[in-house]
Length: 472
Image 1: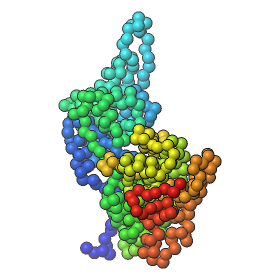
Image 2 (image 1 turned 120 degrees about the vertical axis):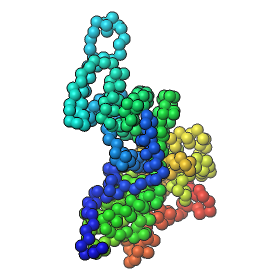
Image 3 (image 1 turned 30 degrees about the vertical axis):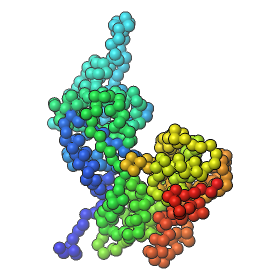
Image 4 (image 1 turned 45 degrees about the horizontal axis):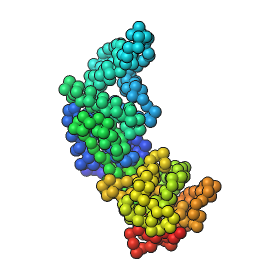
């Protein structure tokens, strides 16, 4: 090949590192999960549920698989305030159909005859051959559900429902029942199915809400990404942009990403920004991303997320005994801690009221709730708890150091400690003398987060055990 005349594909950085939207050009396949999704899509009549932690890559995985299998779809993003009727209306509107409904007064209603919720449904259906059909009919809600399923089926679509877990239980129950309608029509419309994406308990909820769905649903768990998969995002992206990345920088990005693809994409995009990389570099430029670029990326990421970090911990500290759990996770030298280890640590290192299993279960559940900061992550496979974001870990480390001997800070003290913690967290990466003082890659590596996280405030840590002691 004549390299002088070779022209490689040109990509914009925003096409390669996509922290806020599904990856396309830089999509990393996950073979086992891909096969399960493919099987679920190809099995006529089966409804599909993808569930897992936020940031596990459910949406990216599904949309790329739908494209690969040439499935067309209509997509709905759920909110906590969405009713079942508005959910159905949202689909019609997405399909460029106008839906209007109103109560109709009739003589039957005046005689207290229950006829359901009368509605006028007006739909304009544009088919693939360009023809348009106008439909207007008077029906109750059940008929509208059937009409919706038939409409999606006639278009050859499936229905993707994002954030299923946000819906109220009453709406989830009706949606579970609607899945049966979709299944019953699958003989006529082979591609017709509902694909729901949600948090880790989503699949269980559907089955519990309607027992008949137990053998009609394919449940696919999407775990957080493996280190090797996170590495592919950065390495493949760098290759598409024709740049290189030092091994130590790759390791640091992996550790900071904590299995969350969006964090890896965000850090990678910020490193490219610092290196003035806008699109694929020309051959021979020799651009290499190293610790200086990583340091900038982390500093900017912290700046962007500082309000979220602060807010999450402020919410968490309002929960009784949350401070003890946070201390335990901060003091641990392992990636995850089991329930038994947490309760043992708390009862051995805090000399006030002993925490029982029921109380600890309640605290852990609340700390895993988005309304309370969602600072914890539970790994189903290892049955362990950890901070859901590596930045939460180091924030907690610095917070405990700043807190010092203040056992129960009041609101003003807590605010001051939070602000000092954020300042120190920013300084850790933005101050030249703190992290970027070395003349070589090896020196920079020694000051990387991987080592810094283990050495923060060593006076709090005891190396003799898996769970370390806390000096009150």
